[in-house]
Image 1 (cartoon, rainbow, N blue to C red):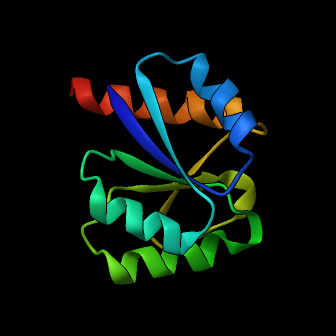
Image 2 (cartoon, rainbow, N blue to C red; image 1 turned 120 degrees about the horizontal axis):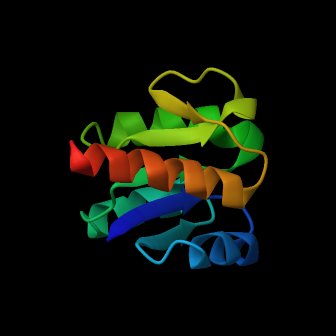
Amino acid sequence: MITILAVGGSESDLANAFARHPSVEIVTAREVEDALDKLARNRRVDAVLLLDGAAAASSARIILEEDPAAPPLYAPAAAGSIPGVRLLAGATSGDLVAALAARLEDDETR
């Protein structure tokens, strides 16, 4: 089971996207403070998906400052280059989840 913490984004869109990937569990956070709390309480998170639009760079900076051992951070390629964040191709939540799940599953098999 892969656990992804999604910061921002529509919960219904994310639920639909994750429903297509039964090996992926979603944990959602509305904003960065909520994400930090969930990261502190749940060490099973394999990756953080930043879907909070223009706030993604700020969220990434705060997460990396507050939790240097945080799981890898990902954002849509449309967010542009963000220090410490890996970019994913995809226009919809479903595309991003599929790309991230594939990348994490590939990492697990190595």
